[in-house]
Length: 112
Image (cartoon, rainbow, N blue to C red; front, side):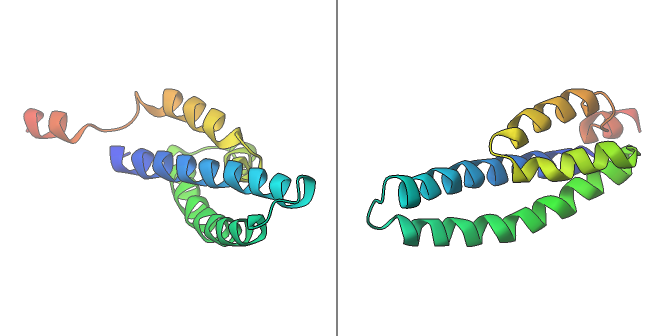
């Protein structure tokens, strides 16, 4: 498995996680604290999170299929983008697990 597969998953996990935390804070500001302007913020961040979550799903599915994960683990990783802060913890666990299995392009060139 190429290192780029893991890297793009990691980037999207962080982007999705940050947007979901911002969305959660926006919803609290909009409905809990009734802050003016929170509705526009929540709309913008919600749309951005929604579209980027789809990209996260594609990259996470690609990673899981290349890592040959069972269906349960695949679903666990896919759903991590829907629970605030879960994407950060799942990403770290997945990265630690797969770092030894990714191919380093520099090492592959040195061996040839």
